[in-house]
Image (cartoon, rainbow, N blue to C red; front, side, top):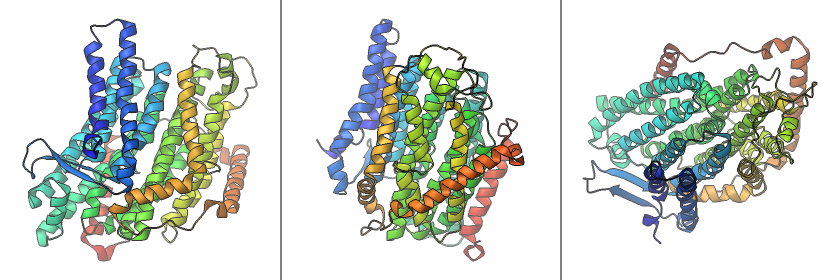
Length: 575
C-alpha cells in the first residue's frame, strides 16, 4: 500500500469509529453496543497504529506527501503534509490513547458518548499534526478544544463543569487573537498555506513586515496558552485536577504538546524566528521552576500533578526555543528539536501513568488530600489487586519524571539539560530537577502505610483492563530507557529533513553523569526531610485553592505578546 492511502488513517478511522457508535446507539442492545464500542476503538487506534508500522520504512527514507483535499484552488484548499514530524506526533498520541481508553473502560466515564468524543479528539490531534495551512490549524485546534471541554466536564461534578467553562473561556479568547494573526498573514500573502506565507513574509519590508511579525507573535502566544506556559497556565490546574483520571492523563500527556510542535513547519519556513526562540527558552525555564514550586505547596494530589505538568512542559518549551534560536538547519538545533520531542514523549508516558495510578490510589483510600490519604497499597489489595501493579507503575513513572535510571526520563531529561548548557535557562532546569524529586517524594506518601489500618472500601476496580493499561505504559517507560540510544537515533533521522541533514548524535551519555544524578537525589532527600521537620514546613502547608481569573490571563497574554513583539521589532534591545 502507498503512503497516500495510509497516512490519513488516524484522521478518518477514528471518525468512522465514532460514527459506528452513533449509528448503533439507538438500535442495538446494551451488549451489542458494548461490542461495537470496542470494535470502534480497534478501528480507531489499532488499525492506524498498524498502518504506521508499515510507514516506518518510507519515513526513514524521508518520503513526504503534500496534498490538497478536495478540488479547491491551491490558495484556498486544505493543505496536509505528512513527514517524519507528523509521523512521530501521531504515534505518540496513539501509544498514549490506547492505554488511557482501556483504563477509562473500568474507572469511567462509562457513557458511549464519552468514547465518541474521545475518538473525535484523536482524529483532531492527527489532523493538527498533519495540517499545513493556518486556517485548518485553527479549525483542528478548535475541535481539540471543544472535545477537551466536554471530556473535562464528563465527570459531572460541579468543579469539573466550572473548570471546563474556564478552560473554554481562556481558550476561546486566545483563538480570537490566533484568528487576528491569521488574518494579518493572509492579508500580506493572499494565502493560508505555510509555504506561500513564508515566501511572502521573507520578501517583506516596512509596514508589511511589521504586520507580519505582530501576526506571527499573536499566533505563537495563542498556541503557548494551549501549551500552558507560565503566565498562560491558569486554566490547566483546574481542568486537569477536576477531570476524570483518564482525561487528565490524556490532556497532560498529549494535548498540551501537540499544538506547539504543529507550529514547527511554519516557524521553519519564516526567517527571523530565532529571536522568538530565545524568549521561548526563557519562558520554558521560568515555567519549570515556578511550576514545581507551586506543586510543592499542594496537598491535593491531582493539583500537584497538574502544576508538575506546567513545570515539565517547560523543559520541552526550553529545548524547542533553543532549537529555534540555534536554527534548525544547524546540527545543534536539529538535535535540540529531537530531544524536545523525545522528552515530550517521555513526559506523556510518565504523566499518563502518574495520573492513572494516583487516581486509582485516591479512589481506593477515599481522599485526594495528602494530609490524610495513606495506605493505598493495602486498600488496593483489599479491592482485589493481589499483585501491586499500581504501586510498581507509580514507582517507574516516579523514576522517569525525576530523571532517575533505568527509565526513558533519565536519558531524555539529562540529555536535554546537557545540550542546553550555555543558556541561562539551563540553571533553572537543573534547580527544578531537585525540586521535582522533592515534590514526588511528597506525593508518594499516599502509598505509605497508614497508622490506622482500617481501610475505606469502595467498589472493586482492579481488573484486567486497568492492569493491562498500566503494564503497557510501564513497559514503554522501561523499554525507552534500555533502548534510548536507538530511539534517539531513529528520531534524529526521521526529523532530519526539517533542518540539518547531517545532524549526528551528541556524544553525551547520561551514565557519565551518574554522580550528578546521585548528588541531585541526595540534595532532594535532604530538602524533603528538612522541609518536613523545620519551619520550612509552613511552605508546604495547604494553600488556598484558587481559580484562574480572566484579568490575570489577559495580563499574562498581553505580557507575552509585548515581550515577543519587542524582541522581533527591536532586536537590538533584546534581553
